[in-house]
Length: 241
Image (cartoon, rainbow, N blue to C red; front, side, top):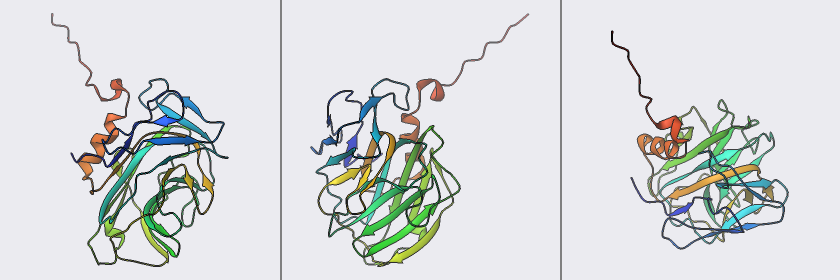
């Protein structure tokens, strides 16, 4: 399993500082009043951050740099049907592999959109059939496996929901561009700095990788965030006469 380049477990439980467990030294900071620490997907208390959808988000100095292969993933719990940013690093002048929830451009309520987002750039895949805004915890993951200097197609984008690859469609709104992709400024979780697009809901265990995780690796990350009872095989008792 590759090591994450950014890993905010979000199990700090108090305050505004979120440790970076990747070893990269890019901790997160919760911005804005009105957030709260809540129970996360494992069932443990204070292992997720609840955003109010008005002025809350997390920032990190981590920079997506020269990405040709890349993965972003994390947990989300929401009932909101509006367009929401999950993660981006585009800034004013960069391009980042970003993830959105809901009808940002091509999606419907609760859809997952994994795109290259920039000032004059928007292309990537949208998964509309697996809505994640039903009030339950869901693990969402976007994997990009590109080639330097080659314009990507839908085959280069894979969206996973709860450990499973889901059907998605490729759309180009503007600026189809070949990798590598480099962001600018800060990484935002729960906010898009140009669209002023906030997330309403809770987030937990966010990770970014400078590699394209395989399907078994995505499944492993998903299973690590489940309650232990959901991943522990049950012993069966038999009575012998």
